[in-house]
Image (cartoon, rainbow, N blue to C red; front, side, top):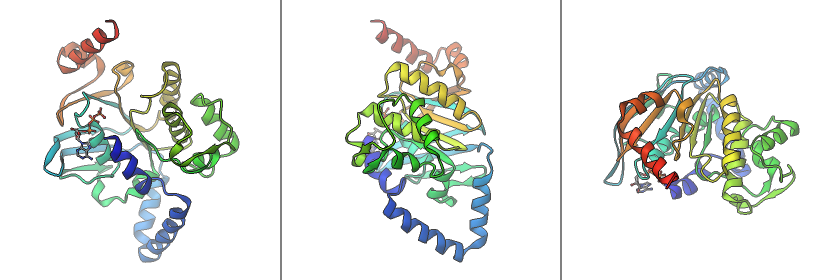
Length: 287
Ligand code: ATP
C-alpha cells in the first residue's frame, strides 16, 4: 500500500506551514464554538499515561474487495506488539485504520474506551508517534523538518536525535528537498525515526520503519526505540521475524485475518503459522 501513504499522508497528517496557519484558525473557531470539547481534548493530551487500543470485529474493503475480515485484537496500555504476515495480508491497511487515514467498513477501534470515529485525526496524531513507510518531508532545513514533531525542541535535542539514528552526515541547516528527494530511502526512514524520537507519544505506530536501514543502524535504532517508547503503547509492523522475542505480543495476519496471537515463545511452541514462517525465513537466509 505504498501509494496510499504517499498521497494520503502529506495532506492529512503533517501540515505544511501554510496549512499550519489554517489549522490554527480552525482550532480557534473550535475553541470559540465548543469550550468543553476542547478542554476535554487538552486534558487527554496532557496526561502522559500510555493508552489502550481495542480493535473489535474490524472489516475493511477497497471498493468491493475485502482486505480486512473481522479483525479483533487488543493492544493493552504500555504493551509492545509486532504485526507480521505475508505481503498483502492487510497489515498496512490495519495500520491506516489505526491512524485514521481510513474509516472501517464495519467494526470499531477504540482508544481508552473512546471510539476512534469520535476522535479528530489531528488529536489522535497529537499524542501518537506515527512513522509510515513513506513519510512527509517538505522543502526546508533538516531543523525545520524535525521541528514538525516538536517545535519546542532545542538544537541540542535535534542533534541528539540525528545521532540516535546515525545520521552523522547531516547538519541542522542542511536543505531537504520536497518529499526528501535528495535523501536515500534509508535516510528518509532515519529522519522519520529521528523526528519520532523528539516527541513523547502515548502510542507509537510504526509501519516497517527499518526496512531500508542497514542492519547495524536498525539494531541501534531499535535499542533507542525500546528506551524512548518504554512507557508507551507500541505497535509496529515488521517484515522481518528477527528480534521479536522482546515483544509482549505478536499478531500474525494472513489474507486479511488474524491467524495467531501470542508471545514469541508461545507461537514457537505452538508450531503453527508463525513457526512455519520462521522456518521459511531461516531456510531463505541460510540457503
Ligand atoms: P506489505 O507487507 O506488502 O506492505 P500488507 O500486509 O501491508 O502488505 P496491505 O498493504 O494492507 O498489505 O494490502 C492488503 C491488500 O489490499 C492487498 O491485496 C493490496 O493489493 C490491497 N490494497 C492496498 N491498498 C489498496 C488500495 N489503495 N486500493 C485497492 N487495494 C489496495
